[in-house]
Image 1 (cartoon, one colour):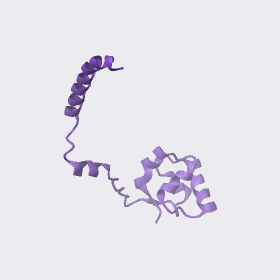
Image 2 (cartoon, rainbow, N blue to C red):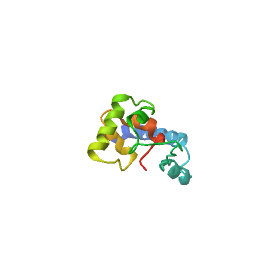
Image 3 (cartoon, rainbow, N blue to C red):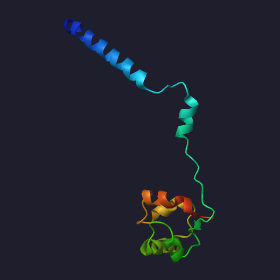
Length: 112
């Protein structure tokens, strides 16, 4: 069991050298303020001409990028069946609206 310990030391030295090299390539961890600020969610700026998804007609909803006639109609039907959207993110409850599609229009829509 201990007879193999002599062979492990070169591996530990190599690992230590690799670890030092890796740590030298990392950005400085001293600036914790910037790393915390980078992780904070950025506020979404809503356009002045944002469409209210709770009041818009199907034709108005079609003016949004990547929202066609069928999707606009589904939004109106969902609103009529379940009531107003409380948050714009709830638009993703519509089958045709994925996270990617929502991200493309989230600055152009509002609920109030």
